[in-house]
Amino acid sequence: MNTRFKTIPEQFKIKELIHQTSYLLDGKLIEWEGETSEIFSTISSTENYHPTLLGSIPTLTEKEAIEALDAASTAFNKGQGLWPTMKVSDRISCMEKFVEQMKTKRDEVVKLLMWEIGKNLADSEKEFDRTVEYIYDTIEDYKKMDRNSAKFLKSGNIHAHIRRGPLGVVLCLGPYNYPLNETFCLLTRDLLIGNTAIFKPAKFGVLLLTPLMEAFQNSFPKGVVNILFGRGRTVASPIMKDGRIDVLALIGHSKSANALQNIHPKSNRLRMVLGLEANNPAIVMPDADLNLAINECIAGATSFNGQRCTALKVLYVHKDIVNDFIREFSGKVDALNFGNPWDDGAKLTPLPEPDKPSYIQELIDDAVSKGAKIKNKRGGEIFKNYIFPAVLYPASTDMRVYEEEQFGPVIPIVPFSNIEEPLNDMASSNYGQQVSLFGRDVKTLAPLIDALVNLVCRVNLNSSCQRGPDVYPFTGRKDSAVATLSVRDALRSFSIRTFVASKDNSYNNEILKDLLASQASNFVSTDYIL
Image (tube, rainbow, N blue to C red):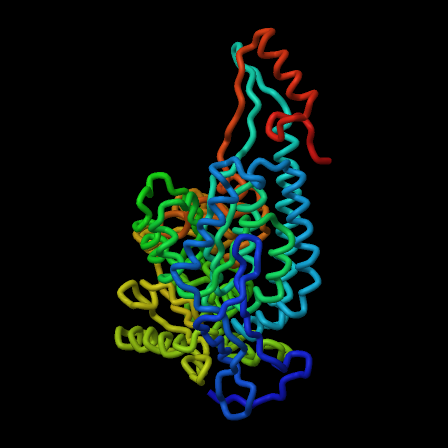
């Protein structure tokens, strides 16, 4: 792959290393004097390619992991701690304090998003801004939930005051492809509802937490948020084995989720909130608007190099139009610009995983050995930190590129003549997150939609698969998700309905009146936040 080194603009240069020397434990930033791990970027700072050293993080041990668990458990205190019994308005104030400090670190975080995971400038800025917006949206939805709960219900002769309460201690593990947005989507809802948390960032996108550590430390009571660095097996596994974790919140791979769930001694009591892998297909019908379908499929398959669970991983194209589709599609893929994240017009950027280009090459080689051809001229061009997207046709279900969530720049195209073919493939798949459906004839689309909504959780009509808007449900069937991660639904995923009930008699009614008048209880209250 021919690349030409471009001088890095001054504002994006790495001028000093970031050594994260502390971790957050029980409200204190604890200085670490033990082993550390260096953090590299696959982006080169020099004309002769070489990974760029960005800094280092602590390599914590099981001892620190259990100390964090102790701190989170003490802060929750079996539901009696300051945080879970606090007024909703006070927890919201803590979160608002955090996000206001977070906004002052925008430039630093955006720069690290580019260097650590190779996300282009526009998408890095979007991820930061979207995260801030998500936090504010969650706060507003929590206020609405609180207002709706500020009342008594009556059924038969029983009064009930119903609210949502916290579940306990949460282990939060975020993903590397959206290390800010997806992680904070978990943390925000988890904390607001009254849970306490232990958070370990992903292996990539870890240094971007450094500018935010003090904000976490001074915005929340001690023990409410505990941030650990290190290897998952060393840190997360002993925490799960202990048995005091009430919720596993993980965005990643189902293998990791299953492994952690299986070592919990009381897995029947463990609440799972999971965003996992997917194999989202596009189905292009013969009457589809070809130009629209091609542009949407390119965006869906190549945005952030296909490193999204919502990416289009396989394209089913009807045989009547497949040749025209491939010709136009391949040309537009080859026209995509590769560059560093800050380069103007860079649609394809370096891959953060050093071994990802060789893995994608393995998928390409396997597909070619089983009958597929690379249909675009630049497909498979390789460099140290990138491999150009390969359009593979005809792809089949026996190829690794079909069976595995490739999570990278490779695009298999499967021809079909009967719509039952992609439907049967989707039904037998281990995944069921989303699908993109391209077509026009309503009589054809209607039964397809009716079938697809029972195979996946989102049908995108004439558009690529996507996460947002964040107020809409975001979940999946089978191995793709457990629980729902949209703004409103996630508050419910991290909580449980709990209520105070009393028989309708003068004795109890007088007590309830006194409870409300005295405002002595943070739970039994009809006050609400405007």
